[in-house]
Length: 549
Ligand code: NA7
Image (cartoon, rainbow, N blue to C red; front, top):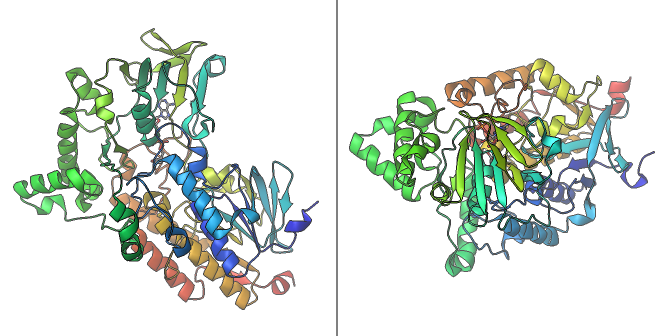
């Protein structure tokens, strides 16, 4: 039984965060009929779900927004790095300006999609029973929508309050005066630790690997920045975002550290630490050369140690030797994170010395026999990132293989980080093998000259409409070549030398391979454009009638 409304749809989009919202707007403008299925109750994607205390974007407001003029013209940000509530309010503004909600079905979790090769349509099913048969399926599911939950014994017996950061209750959790335990010190952990420490009766941080966090330099925006500079500056900034490797308005990379004299190194590192983008990771050789990486690490370690009063904590939070190279994991930005550990109500438990044995009804028991009594446990344990967002949906292509199975049996394979062979008429902006998760998200999705993903997809669909094509599918050869390119770029850097979500090594049992295109946005957009200009080279396009003969 198909929803009559949705019978002849051109496109179903899954997810209504930045990519889903923008994709919907652009496709509608191009005359396609589109519906969005969104699991949350409101627009915002990751910003709807991640409502834990302290959640905040770690890209600057200037670039972390849509460059669509009707949206930015009358929106005023308050802080340099906006918090979650401000981002959700921004999405309400986006919704109002672009009139998106009328085509979005909220509280609608997509369970599966199967490609009907006889009709060149997807059959999409949802938990609430809604179905649709669109020509195209666009997965705007983000890179962090499948939480990674630890499987400690006794988890179900815990009688206090326990939540993963990305599944935090929308109406909040009482934290004031509570004994709080936080497992995980990634980006989410750092933020929730900073926010919780001032209000907790006691905070226990369970750390496995120290975070190499760098200063956020957060501040309120001035009136001039908010209003007067907007008209003048934004168009320049947005144009600039399309020309940098990171999709931010400033070049992510400066000169190599090893090209400088020791004095120059020191002055430059100090300067970047105090005010610039990426701080110690802003130098290209940090990614490729162990000596440059060590210089950056030593500088970071010495800076951080100065902020921690108890010398026994130095080795835990900023060890003498780096446990993995700087920037092999995604950098986190902090605001007084290290000072938290100078507070009397905060304890750090090093899980390498005393691993967690079990969760008890009252708290967490570690290997030294201590039972840490806790009213609230926060699981800041991250995600089955990038591929997990897609493979958690039962997506079956032309030969009925679930995409998760294809990727776990044969390894991750995509073409241009946008499509996968065997899954026709399906695209995934901001997904596996694309630069998305490593760059400024909105810039990766929005292109002024159709360089980037969502606009590239709109152009592709327009091209197909103009030529009466009804099916597009990446070829296995193009996919193999893309995979080899993504792998070769990644191997030049340090990413395989840390266990992180960049490679899937953070998820027990997950096949380890680079999940993200590490070559930067400029190269990526050039390669996507070349395929399009060559009649979508690497894809096979066909007509329904021809293929059914
Ligand atoms: P991350 O960055 O993957 O961090 C997860 C943290 O949780 C990290 O410190 C992990 O330690 C720790 N972890 C994970 N599983 C366990 C178990 N079983 N026991 C103890 N500790 C554990 O996720 P975030 O949510 O912080 O950030 C994800 C991205 O979202 C981030 O990069 C931003 O781009 C936004 P580990 O380091 O693996 O030893």
